Amino acid sequence: MNKYSAKEKSRAVLAVWTEKRKAKDICRELSISSGLLCRWQEIAMEGMLLALEPRWREESRCPAILPKLRKLLDRTVTAREGRLPRLERRLVKLQEERTAPPA
Image (cartoon, rainbow, N blue to C red; front, side, top):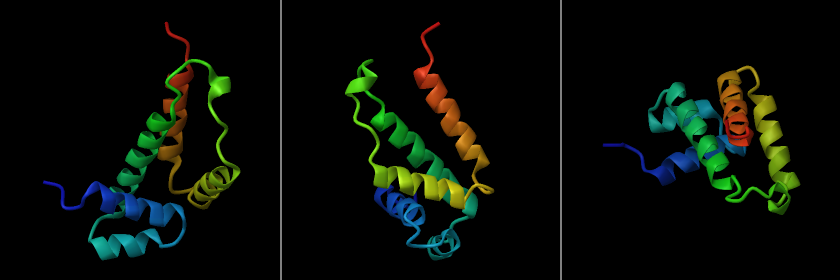
């Protein structure tokens, strides 16, 4: 059984992503490892990519990412550049898999 609900995990991830809390403080408060918090972040990012993937092939109908969100994502990645190379590689791989033409 999971000790934390999806809502609690989401709050923890969003607190880190919005830089309202430091990852080490969240880990200490929830008594979790930094590796587990990183995994929650990876799962959250994969879920966002999947949820935001257009259900149709017409990319032009998909609204552009909001500038504020783009800035937040860029700032988050930049701030953690040294700590999240695996996540970045995974995101690139996921995007490539979704945009690759069928074989």
